Image (cartoon, rainbow, N blue to C red):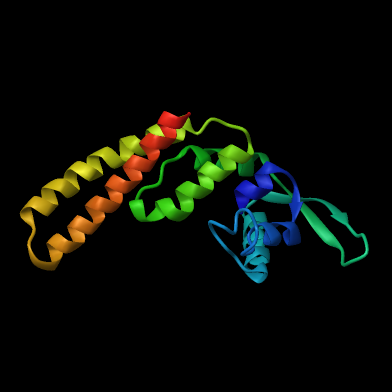
Length: 161
């Protein structure tokens, strides 16, 4: 949410549209309009976004929000930080890559940092698969192969650049 406001000042309805099932961001992460407005309230309370203006065309009055300096710094930090877990790649890493692309920025630093996070995890999971049995082995194997798949995707993205 903060990354959307940090891109350009927006009103909640525009953000909700982007996060809807047919929205560009909604293809990765969907959020219903009431939750969008609630999240924006929280960001405003935390001092990460602030009212820039109000607009009114033919419909209701809309409050345009812009990221504060603190909000821009937080969004920038988030964009450059690799995800902690493979399970977060489908949503969080893909969102970061989308925002970097929308900004015309090179994702290479993020992708390389992500490789640095995943390589030790992959080695640890290989050892766990070798030691485990029963369902513990099944789960470790699942996690290992998921990690390897993500590593392949990241390496391919880096290769394609």
